[in-house]
Image (cartoon, rainbow, N blue to C red; front, top):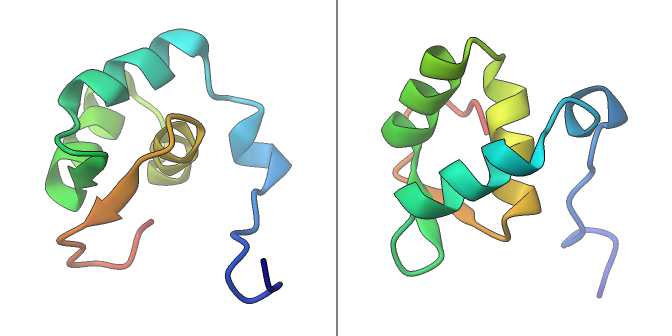
Length: 72
């Protein structure tokens, strides 16, 4: 895998991800993907920054699509 295709995982956000968050994000996904609006809503409902929700999606092995704002 080239260094360009490897995603940087910032420890500030990764350290805030819980197993419960990862499981909850997986439940919202379809075909290994989650939409940006769904992930943003998840972050708001959980009271966490978007970056933490994005780290939870990464931990769950999900791809974020339909991204409007570039948050993830």
